[in-house]
Image (tube, rainbow, N blue to C red; front, side):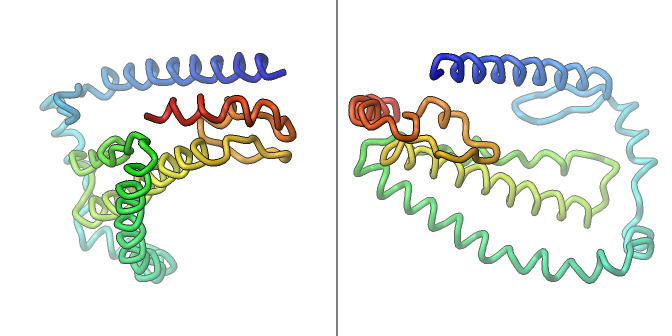
Length: 192
C-alpha cells in the first residue's frame, strides 16, 4: 500500500511538471520572458496593457459598496500577519537551529511580480502585494510546520486531510508503530 501511495505522489509531481511547462507556454502567448525573476513584456504588449488600465477614480467609482466596506476588515489583518511572520521567523531560527533542521528560505515563498502589470492601477497593485504577502506567508508557515511535523511526528492521520504538504505521504502509516520507531532517525536526517 505504501509503494502505491509513493507512485501516486510521483504521478502528481509529474503532473505538476506538466503544469509548469504549460505556464511557460503562456509566457510566449502573452509575450513576456523572465530576467532574473522579473517579467519583461514586449513593448507592444505593454502598450496594449496600459490601454486597459482603469484610473483610480474610475476604479473606486465603479466598485461595489460591499467591496469598499470589506477593505478595512481585509487590511486589519496586516498587523497580525506581520506579527505571525516575525514569530515564525524566530521559531525556526531558534528551534531549527537546536534540532539541526535546515531553515526555510522566506524568499522562496513570496512572489511579488504583479506590480509589473501595466493594466493594474495603484490600488490594484497594493491589493496584489497584500494578497501575495498573505499567501506567501501561509505557504512559508506551512513549510515550517511540515518540517516540524516531520521532525516530531511523521505519522499520517487516520482520516483524510485536505491538501496535505508534499512530504506527508512518505510518513509512517497511522497505527504502524514499528515503522514510526524504525524510521524516526531517517526522517530527522532528511531535514538537515
